[in-house]
Image 1: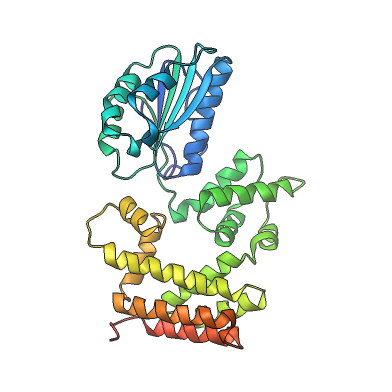
Image 2: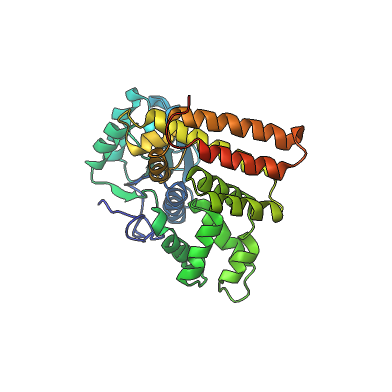
Length: 342
């Protein structure tokens, strides 16, 4: 039976299976949220090994499989009559193995617990469609949308037996960023240091308020967005709190290169997941890049990248005042927005 999980319903931490014997069954895990997919697989494997303590556990990447390796992994070992097999990265499965994997999923047999993981995108889409038609146990973890992240944090706090209000959850997202794994780790760190299991905004500010990577990318976001006062204000605050100047130029360079790749690839008619993968950014970042692209041209991006490279050399020793060099590059980058400058 197919069931949805993850983004949209906020049910990020439900168990992927109902607790019955997983042998003779197949779990299909889909979607790009790697942390949640890993947890779903871990729950499935844990249930299987508790059911059959003699079971062998094998984890394989699909790209490494051939027909013989698949048969061997599914058949257990000399010392175990039951097998737990996890196959990840289904999009990389060799074409000649696909029919054999589908046949195995259709009839896994009473001594095999099989988990299959597809991370999204077009690769392996035909195989995924064939597997879905088998009416397997399916759990889906699409990318968590930015506005859902505070809800994810609140759910993660409950999962780890803590308490936090929505304001604290939102503050943690603002401080740590949008990566689910980083947010889960931050929750764990805060709860480990909270004697009563209650997270507060004050604790979030104390632990994460001055994170250099958050501050530097905030400067870059305001710069590319043309917000002069915000960019210069955040830059001065970052430098006053000890953020290394090189982190500022690194963030500017990374954001500009992502924007340049977006401008080059947005007309290629790729799915969002494939375009994000080609650029090297999470899918949610495409909305930010699309908004920025309204005010940027490729020539302007190229000139801005050159200006940041000069500033990077200056702060690494070619200039006596790194702060002044950074302020100048912020103004220069903002000036590169708009029409092409030839």
